[in-house]
Length: 289
Image (cartoon, rainbow, N blue to C red):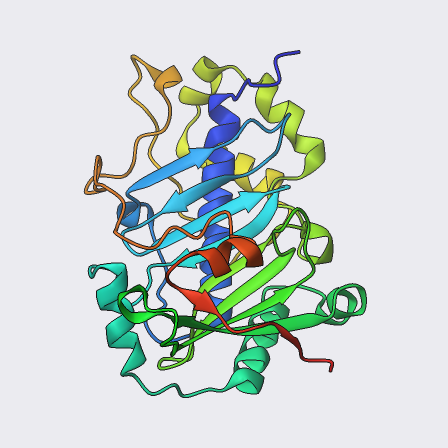
């Protein structure tokens, strides 16, 4: 059995459902500047081999969405002022007033997780929450610590990586990052029904390419673990080369470089963060203390 194999049918279904689930999540967040996405918004996408780890990713110019364990795993938004250098960005942030403090940031984080079907009570029973406010050292001067209006709320840790992590930007009360390394607390059903995965993998590329739009739509609906109000079906590759993968809808931007943003995946350990000149972290404190 080829564990790396991905059929055209599976790729089509998973891509359609990732897009639908991403929009479901964005609707649940319902924040300023958060809008639904379509195939025409994507700069890139990826579907991973389902026999290894069902999932994939979607990317637009200001948002990266990852799926793993057949469920939504993380949303990473472009940081405010991402076009500036790190020091310039922090200098600008330091002059902004935050609309929230640690308690309010925690409340926002838990509300977002609950809206995304995360079992927050079970999560906090297993892993008490901790919150950090970011800071930086202007010009690398460790004697001058400046607080930033960004809060990180974290639950648990494995190999130095938080099991669940939400980053809140205080001035706009909006998420920068919502990430789950452990999907065990996610109560939302899987994207593609496990019982349908091998069926999709067994469908030949030729047979799928010859299916009409209604047949493709029926296949997606029958394979979906969730129910969606609407589904946006992607275009398929040309008849001459269906094995080359999915083709974005006309107008989709291709070959566009990812937006400039601070790379925070995977997250750094606390020790690594302290070694860096910026950004820094205030010492962790438990919200349960």
